[in-house]
Amino acid sequence: MDALSLYDLNALVRRSLEQCLPDEYWVQAELSEVRVHPATGHCYVEFVQKDSRSNNLVAKARGVIWNNVFRLLRPYFEESTGQVFTAGIKVLVQVSVGFHELYGFSLTVHDIDPTYTLGDMARRRREILKQLEEEGVLTLNKELPMPELPRRVAVISSATAAGYGDFCHQLTNNPRGYYFHTELFAAAMQGDRVEESMLAALDSINSRADTFDVVVIIRGGGATSDLSCFDTYLLAAACAQFPLPIITGIGHERDDTVLDSVAHARVKTPTAAAEYLIARMDEAADRLNDLAVRLYEGVTARLKWERNRLQQCRNRIPTASVRRVSSAKLELLTARKDLHSSVEAVLARHRHKLELLKQRLADASPDKLLARGYSITLKDGKAVKDAALLSPGDRLVTRLYRGEVQSVVNQESAERRMANG
Image 1 (tube, rainbow, N blue to C red):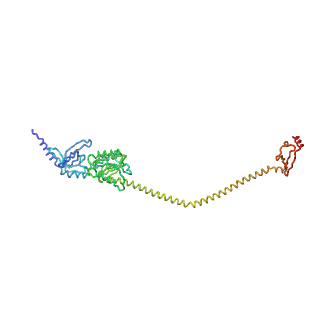
Image 2: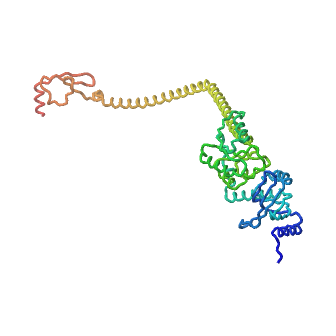
Image 3: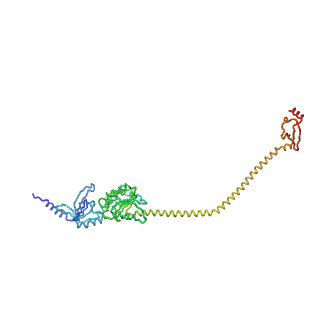
């Protein structure tokens, strides 16, 4: 029985593959590993394909991008996509199939289509935003009211980032001299630790949320390809639900990350973030100035109106005084006339009553009785009403209508009185 050595078998496989698959093919796959050899500059990758339902691996192949190709392909891809050429992304690559007797099956990469990766990145952003929307948290941070005076600022950035220095310098040297208190919560702004470190920074700020007005996330400089680290669900969800307004300044104007989409406000650069806060303070200061001007003008107008009104009152005082005195005189004359009439009426009534009393008094006068023939006998100036009270020798005065008669009571008169009695 003829037997093949392993080398002969592998050589047969290589020749068969070269004959059967002589062309170059466009292949869709995910990069599960990217490793650049430091000495040669060759890039060794591992392509995988996962089941869309179970996420289990269904295919895997090794690949290589030779140095002369990788030096052109990598910057082209990263500049076009804004995405680092790293594990975890999906790519569309043009490959040729190769087999080596010692190293086995591999794919040699000749070209790459960035638009496929861009589409996948955009799809992934859309999926994250859709998930946040379905959970009802997508616009929560945007709906928070921005403080009138955002002076207490929590900053998430790299401590050594030039952008952080630019941000602080811009705030400190603002034209109107506003005071801002800033506190840095250091976090990685590129690389694999971005999500982890930023979530830790957000947790630290949240524990002291009542001591800050806003959160500013800034990233100064750095490659556009590093922005993909801000397109994660956990980071976006944490920022969307954060209790303080978040301002992002992590990219360039043409770049848009998921984090930018959920933040309260998005600006281009760290300097622009500082300008945003200063503009907010300017708005508040301008409103205060407007209120001060309106208050001054209102008070001035009110004082002028009151001064005019006082002058008018002062001008009306003489006329009003004369009119009032005249009115008072008229009222006094009327009252005097009414009083005179009232007194006359009262006097007339009393005069009539007096006349009646006089008449009654006259009718009851002793002179009237004397005129009719009656007389009055007086003893010691008092009228004698009972003869039995007289004694002999009493001197009596009898008053007639005209004149008086004096008499003395004698014994015979007394006896006759007694006999009559």
